[in-house]
Length: 445
Ligand code: ZN
Image (cartoon, rainbow, N blue to C red; front, side, top):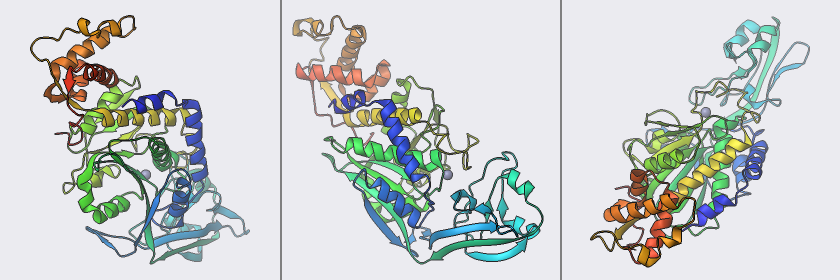
């Protein structure tokens, strides 16, 4: 099972990073929210790359303790000065309107309008991102610089939106593997023109699904493109019995900024996916941090709620809230770097490689060491620059393959790379020195 490592070698990071960035450029102008046509348009574009099945869940559907909200759509919004000039214009930047703003058309003095204006005094040049999903309100977001320059006057405000019975929309790409056991990759699609938080995850998930699709995989892979929080709650409520099949999962978001990686562990703390990601990061050469689970953050909050407790972590770069551009107009196409996107995609592929190839084997010759030289297993490795590591890997695999250690366990304990451990395990299998199907994967037990 070397197909994923082969695939990784054939990826040109410059080209792939540029393609991922281009997909984000296409998605960037769309005004998304937790429901509405922005999500549909986004899924249409993602659906040009990978097969996506779209679900529409009607307003009012009870999903555990929540209810699918009314659908929000917006056509136009502005603040007009007495001169008729649009001083704040939704069409110039969709962040100018607070998401889920109810319709309004009125004239009011600046002093009253200010109750509905949001700025970032600390970052006076940036426009904040604000939402009001569950409280009926309307609002505009603008730079603090602009607010301080607005003269006292009576302004015309207009939000041409609708909040009506409709649907919550999500997309799913399912890749059927040899087994019904599933790997879940989940990203949110509910933010408007924000790049790292939202679009980078969509781009990575779409490219990963595209790369895995032609491969013959052991696990089945389910990619979810869902609105944050209410989307994962809805999906879990509608597929409660199917969640038992989820053996590994990752929430993908914030994978395009130039910072190092951060892996937030699942609630289980030492699920197989937690150990796999930590191992891949350790050997990646990239800067990284491992964070413990906390019931805050992205949709891992729902996947890791106690009733589900799924083995789902969050693999990102700089965590949300830890970079100043987060939830502002500065989280834009310049902030996300093609090189960072490509590096993140390759890291995810490295994780999938271990997920697919971890296995449990038994040494068929456990009474003292088998004679490797007689079988040509020493000569086979002579002359390679990594021959010492390969020899050590062989000895570790033979020693620890007693039926209780997976290849990942052996890689972790020996401090050797997983792909080297797997490679020598393949050689030992061919020589009959190991037996057993790679069946130790999956449960993490
Ligand atoms: Zn966000």
